[in-house]
Image 1 (cartoon, rainbow, N blue to C red):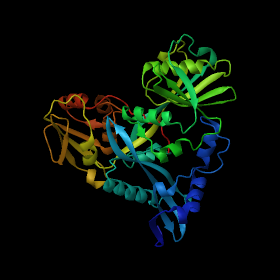
Image 2 (cartoon, rainbow, N blue to C red):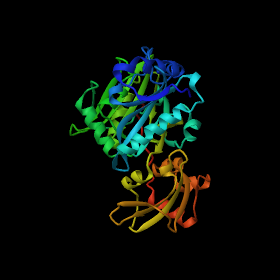
Image 3 (cartoon, helix red, strand yellow):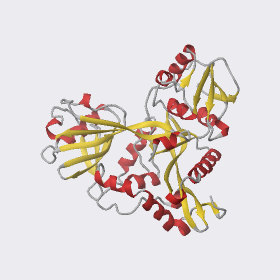
Image 4 (cartoon, one colour):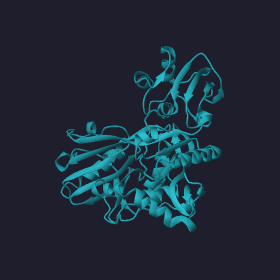
Length: 402
């Protein structure tokens, strides 16, 4: 790092061009991949450009030249029915001539410290390199499942009341329905104006939104899709109940004569094959979002444990070389009303693990027993049973890419 290197906050007025130039240079391969598969957009020729005035963006400057940058979008997430303030990390990029100087680590450290001060207890991101982020305390917390269904495999015997309507992107029922879904779904982000802007950023004019209304004309499900080259691409489908799922798939099947196949993404962590009459479809799964607890005490004090009786107590011996305030032992005590108190110290039920393992454990991506068998956490059999009882078993639904 040269002596002229300085860290400062980027602004829309003075740094937008350099910010966008660095993204365009660093993510040119990613942009080609976006064109080659998935949610196509023939107009993607410029890098993703978040609105600097709505995100917290910091960078290292070599004199007046931007060398490295790191952005945090402030959002809210449903974590087991507790709405928590989090940060979505994006636009992480460094010019190749500045790699190996610790610039990205410095920006990450600075941003995580700021998140801690603001009470944002969790950071999440879409990783360009899983090993790189694991080395700094991040771990996988959700998957993206993709499916491909031939036209002759679409369900034909679905009976569903209600009806489906195609609407505009700013339709109030769409926003309202997502808010209801997010309020009852672990891991779901509560989309603010900025998140909705990013949600639609890569979509073309032919993108369609279809909302399912039940027999009482109440919206209970929606899907966002695109039909191109005889293929229906489903970007997202959410439903509040089984009738909404049936109604939307009945609507999809009505396109049988228009498409050769239906492809899409599923973030519910549940295979859709079993739901279909012809289950011999192609489904794939890949890690999607990584997370990192920013402050263990802040996170645990907002956490909702499952099946507690009150008076449970255990010690989390956490390893976190990157953030020293997490690198210690914490006594966690759960009261009869479900409230959690955390203090440094020791108790008789001890669990040893690193910060990444703690993150994936508490967000329920992997069960305590699974992590124990993988040697990712160390404890005794009795404490392991206590963890199995206390940790909810629902995986996180995260569909946003920012």
